[in-house]
Amino acid sequence: MAKRYWLMKSEPETYSIDDLERDGWTYWDGVRNYQARNFMRDEMRVGDEVLYYHSNASPPGVAGIAKVSKAGYPDFTAWDKRDSHFDPKTSKDDPTWMMVDLAFVEKFPGVVSLDTLKNTPELEGMLVIRRGQRLSVQPVEAAHFRVVRKLGRKAGR
DNA sequence: GCCAACGTTGGC
DNA sequence: GCCAACGTTGGC
Image 1 (cartoon, rainbow, N blue to C red):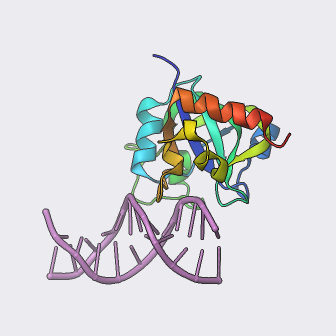
Image 2: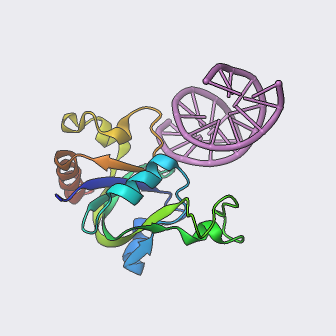
């Protein structure tokens, strides 16, 4: 199957692109939304590329690129009582929540801000700039991905 | 910190 | 199955 592209949101206070660069890879735990879960469980494949989006940041925007290094598997933090994402309704026999692993690819020299995304005509229709769009994992068109990467590589220069 | 938008829960 | 109440997301 052809490589696909995604956008994933993280609050930099919780886990930023710098954290990912330092660690090299991470597991994407804590997603507790069915639509986002379905993307990770059913559609994300190893090698897919991901726009790493900083939400609740100033400015919010795409900070770099990651890639999927492991396809969907159960989010074990859902079973951990001490974890903030603990979900008492799910069991190990029938996991509700899934996650993927992400590997660091690149950090942009500057953030491609939400404002820039909104003001770039080639990005019209991108989900992340749609009002009220809260999905933390969302598909991105290949053409949009390339435009954002180009903007990112020259951002802050 | 505020609040609009949205998803989920639960009473009926 | 409806829908009000509630919790969360995320821009500002």
